[in-house]
Image (cartoon, rainbow, N blue to C red; front, side, top):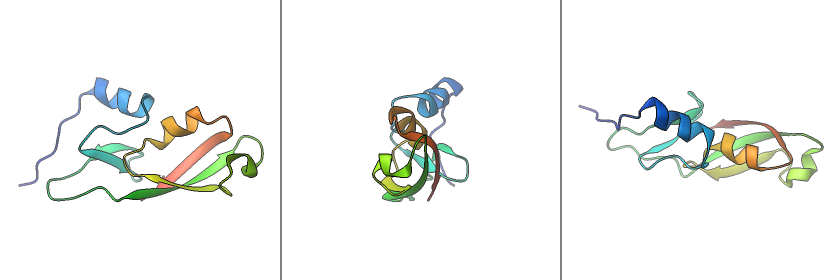
Length: 92
């Protein structure tokens, strides 16, 4: 039977709202748009790919609009910390 690490609402809020890194045992899930459970025996993908909509011009982010980041990164928190990042959409 698959086991997962239960996450309280307070922890979930912390995950998506700050720190920028998913807690151990969780990784970014593009379908749910949150740091999500990894079932036992599964591993996070190494990276996720994100599309950035820049606040000004895409060249400000230096990525041409696309960026790859570790799957344990919370992209919303990352985006919030970047002055050039207006919106971010990621897929696994």
